[in-house]
Amino acid sequence: MIDENELNRLATKAQQADAAATEQAAVTEQTGTGDQGIQTIELTLDAEMAMMLNMILNMLKPALPSLEQIYTPPVIQALSESTAAVCNKHGWLQNGLAGKFAEELALGAIVIPVGLATYKGVTADIAYNKAAQTTQEKPVEPAKAE
Image 1: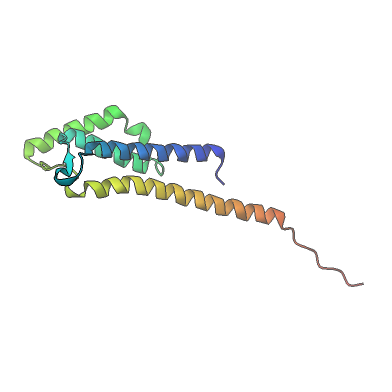
Image 2: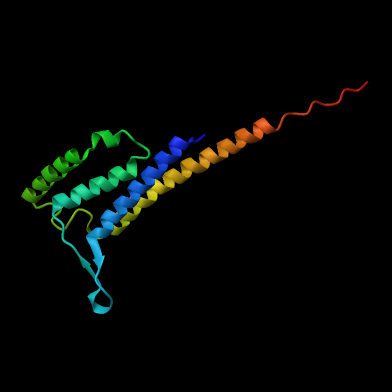
């Protein structure tokens, strides 16, 4: 059964997922109509890695809450900067981390936490309704023949 604290925690996780989507949307901005199309903002590899780690963290936190204590902002920054330095040294990922799948990865970062929260909520609702139905329905004893 989901109590009010669990609902609040799930709502917070959904807000964090929305924040990750907003962060991703800030990378690409619409610049009008017609031939202008979409203008992309170039990110450094370390900034892109930090953003990707944050998206993955926000996606996994509902299922694995301990990750939030492990992957703090300084840890994410250190991981992304050191990994980007090695990638730049060897010429790896020079076209970006997400490449042509950036939008799909951003969608997954939103859909997976929302889907998990929905599954947990619906499962808890079903369990609650079954428990309430069980307590309301008391078996009727059969009449005794005299």
